[in-house]
Image (cartoon, rainbow, N blue to C red; front, side, top):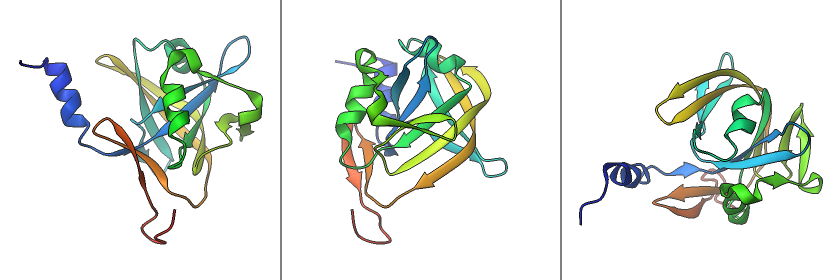
Amino acid sequence: MEIEPEQAFRRVMSAFATGVTVVSAARDGGGVSGITVNSLTSVSLKPRLLLWCLGDESARYDVFAAAEAWGVTVLGAAEEALALRFARAETESIVAAEMEMFTGAPVLRAGVAHLACRTHDRRVAGDHLIIVGEVVDFRVQPGAALTFFRGLYGRLDDPRTGSS
């Protein structure tokens, strides 16, 4: 049986290992939403810019497409449950006890790195919105990273220290 071109493309792209993040932003009317993202990439050092891609059929499209300030939490190897949770629209809410404000952006208390961003640009490309953010603050701590490869989660230890 031949697979559809979209599925074939997805299979090819799954061979590119990525890190796993949760992007978070405040909702109109209160509350904070999170969404699992592995399309995060650095764009520029001066100014510090990064981008991520949001599907136009996402149930959280309106929240993230309109957000001016948002945070990125780079998940650690032991945080697969958070990745799975925020991949589903019905579990998008982040409760106050599991988050903090970091330079004006909500981030999870979990994670091995955090970035506070403000929207720099938005561009439609195919069935996604590319959101470019200016990084206004960042921090990192030791620990193994959660990875995504061929549709499965894994871990990558810090090669400089050999530790998790």
